[in-house]
Length: 176
Ligand code: FES
Image 1 (cartoon, helix red, strand yellow):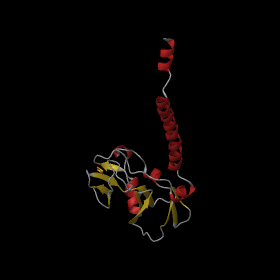
Image 2 (tube, rainbow, N blue to C red):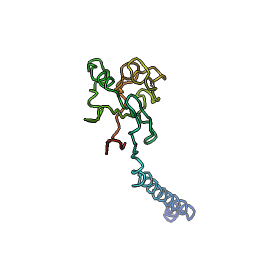
Image 3 (tube, rainbow, N blue to C red):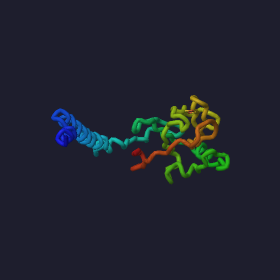
Image 4 (tube, protein in one colour):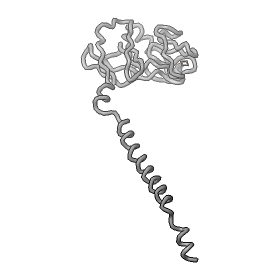
């Protein structure tokens, strides 16, 4: 009687093979997943590509260019003195996302506005020199940005983002 019960509790050869295969399968998945995660971490060459160098010497005052960085458009605008004054004469209490123009540019490089050209509402690319505030206008749902890239009217919740960047010389800008 006991013998029969013992026999039932022991896995048959077929069951044993099935259990063994399942275990190997699970371990196998664990081993495969780790290299995939490791591959998702960018190596040094990818990180290097994460920076973009731009020669800004040919951008005249009152004009802008768009470059791509990490798949996003970056607006590089060389503002006129009049545009800078206009941006700085705005009261912070009139802004949805209060931020001084001085805090959106580098000290001593006030004419250069460098920002991610993506509307902060749902991600469209705003049109330059359009809208009610002399900056950019997003036609998707009607967001107006001023000449500092700050949201002034429409559904976008915050100002356009300022990326990391630095001027390594008067004409050379590195974004990233
Ligand atoms: S995406 Fe720009 S207003 Fe909606």
